[in-house]
Structure formats: structure tokens, C-alpha cells
Length: 262
Length: 292
Image 1 (tube, one colour):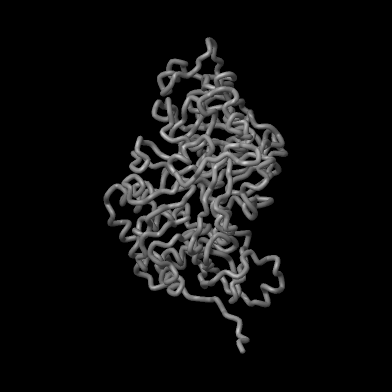
Image 2: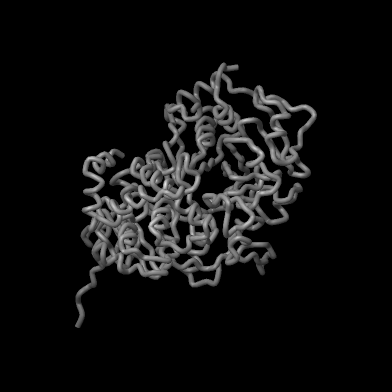
């Protein structure tokens, strides 16, 4: 145990633990938890990881600190880049993307890990909430080896029975072969990480299942905060809190501006 | 006999005159803001805009846009969706041609190669073909897989920002073009590139491999012309300026347009040209942005 820590720090730490050396990690804009996670993994156990942010590909395991960019349009990230993937075709060599990992958010997420960045409301021409658009998430979720759904809140409005519009296909309407049937080469969403818990997808049905509860969170709270029926096993472990060493590296070498603690 | 090679340098006013009501215009990354501001100043209307980001929002705010072809309209921290885009889309004032990065690339490529469509896999299983009926799900004749046919996305005009060019339209980027720039250039009928510097043709010939765009249709001199965005090797993004714009745009989306109109007047409509705009921004601010 390492004393006090913020829930976003916990989320970053447990994502970092699940990343393997040698993988290429793609983080989009406005995902500070994922940005922290890939940097932390890179420093603690991933010297051969490659970090891609806004097209800039870097290996910076030798740096004492790898601060997170201040905002999405902070082009100074390229100061560490060894190459800039976007000089060619962003989606060249999709054949090699099984080794790629990425992180996705959404304005709605359904029980099968489908996500929505398009908008909310029954009439597409008059949306109640117009979302930002799909970015590259359809292409990324189709092709990467696996991805993580990372949410900064956990509510029935966000975790819904049905997405009004699916922009990134997770496990469709369920079933272990949901993606294979459609010919989607990527491995689909692995975990959903929220401020309350970690969820995965049941092997047969690919329905979202409670996997671990963050310290102090009750299963009943998760159930009430989820807009669909979550698979809840009889016994749910507690998320392993950050170790002192994980927190030290995270705070001293990655999140030097304390963005995850605000 | 005709022995004079045509020079392609035009000024901002001439460039803006290439943009006509109802055109499809693609905007590169960083956005060529000197040209974008001229479009706003001219009051062009009903554009189909192939663009993502702040330039898109500003052109919508100024009433220039009828349709957007955009993969992302996020506004940065605390602003999940660009305010003018969001409000106009929700009220049905603009039409959104829903797409994403890969689909956009495919459509631009189809246009460049005069193909009726390019196949793309991503989007299969999603709502994209429903909300954008131009995207057709089809079964491929070779392997029988379900794919999406993306029709050509053809800009009448592509507007880009780059580091340098010679008088004949040979363009050179410092640190590479924006990720979609070359797709937009290849797909468009015509391309105008605004540059930090015009350089000698001899300099281009000394390293032809460094030429990123051959034969752009026109070149516009625009030092600091991407402000408030970055220009690689020259200056960084002016975050404070963008935040000020965003704030004004958010107020406007909430129904209070005064601050936004003031912004557009001060920075887009009043300045007679780039130099006047840069004076409005101020030398002190501009020099701070040289800190790379």
C-alpha cells in the first residue's frame, strides 16, 4: 500500500501493468490517463515499447522524465519523435497492427463495448448532443490487437443499454465470434476502466463483466451506476492499489504537473 | 515564341478570390489561417469544408459553411466538442458528412485516382453507413468480405500551409506535411499553399528530394500565416489565443454572440491583410512563440 492516491492515478497504474514490452501504444488527444499509463509502462517495464501520439513515434525510455503534453494541440511532443508516421499514410501497414494497442473514450458505451462519438438523440439530423466525431476510432478499433475503453466517469448515461450510434465496433451484439463474422482483424476491447472498477467481456457472450472493484467501491454502487445489466460474478476481487514504486515513478517521472490528481 | 515560365505567386486577396460560394474546400494542418481569415473577410457562403479542428469551427462561426467533411471536431481540454460546430449541427444549420480518418483518406484517394470508390474495412458494423448513406456496404467480389465503398471526396480547392516554396509552386515542408495534406492536395482540382518563405528556384534544385508538393497551383507569402497554430521550425501554437477564441465561440453557442463577433471583426474582418492581423496580435506575443 502506498497511502493516498487519486483514482486517475490508480487507473493509469493498472492500465500500465497490462501493457507488454515491445508493443506499439497509440494514444489520441484528451486521454490523460492513457497518456500517463503508456509512459509509466515504458519506464517501468517497457524499454522496447513505442509510443505514438499525434503521429509522432517515440522511444524515450532513457529519459528521466516523460512529461505529458499540455493539450492535444501541443506539437512539442515531436521533439522526442524518431519518426513521424504521418509523412506517409497513417494507415499504411495495417497488416502489422496486431501488435498495436490503443485507448478509446466515448459519450456512450454499451454492454458489448461498442462506443459512440457521433452524438446522442434519436434524430441524427437534430441531435440533442452532437459529439466530436469518430476521429480514427473506427479504423483503430477495427485493426489493433486489442484496446482499452477508458472512462473518466461511471454513470448510467454513459454506460447505456444501446448506443444511439456506434462509431467503434467492439463486440457488436455479442458472441465470441462477433468480430470474426464481420471480418474485423483486430482483437477488440479487452478492459473497460472507470473510476469505480475494471470490467472485461465474458468469453462466450462478450457481455461486459465486473472484473475488479477499486478499493472502497461496492458492487452495488457499480450496478446502480451502470445503465445495463452487468455480469457480476459471485466473488469480485479488489483492484490491486498502486505500489509505492509505481506511484513514485508516476509522480516524479510522468505526471510531474499533477494532472491526474486535480 | 513563349519562353517565360509562369510564376505562381499570388497575394492573399487574389487567393481568396479563388474561393467561390458553394465550393468544396479542403483545409490542411496546420490550417493556413491567413487564407482562412480572408475567406471569412470575403463572406463566402455555403462551403463544403473538408477540415477538422479550429479552422472548421471559425468558418462555421462566420457563416461560411453548409456541409462539413470532418473526422474530429474536439476543442481540447474541457471542450469536448467545438462550440460553433456543435450548435450548428444540433440545429441543422450545417450538414455533417459523417466519416473518420481512414474513410476520409479512402475518399480523397478515390478522387485523386478517378475511381468510383475506394474500399475500406473500418466502419463495417458501425452506424457510419446509416448516418452517411453515401457510404455503401458491399460484398467484395474477390473474397466475399463485407467492406465499405467510400465515394470520391473531391475538393475544388485545397488550402495548405508550408515552410517554403519557390515561385513555380515547388513546396517544401519543414518536418513534413500535415497528415492529410498530401491526400487533400492529390484529390483537389487546385491547391494554394501559403508559405513562411519564398525561396529561390536554385535552392529547390539543390535538393529536389526535399520537395513535398510539386507544382502547387499558387503560392502565397505568409510569414506567421498559420498563427494561432504552429508552423514547424518557425513557431508554436498560441494556446492563449485559441482559448480566447474558444471562450467567445462557447458564449456564442450559448446565444451571446458579442464576444465572437468582436473576435471575428478584430482578427478576420478588420485587418486588411496578414501584416495588419499580425499587428493586432502584437509583436510581443509573436516573438514568445519562437520558443520551441
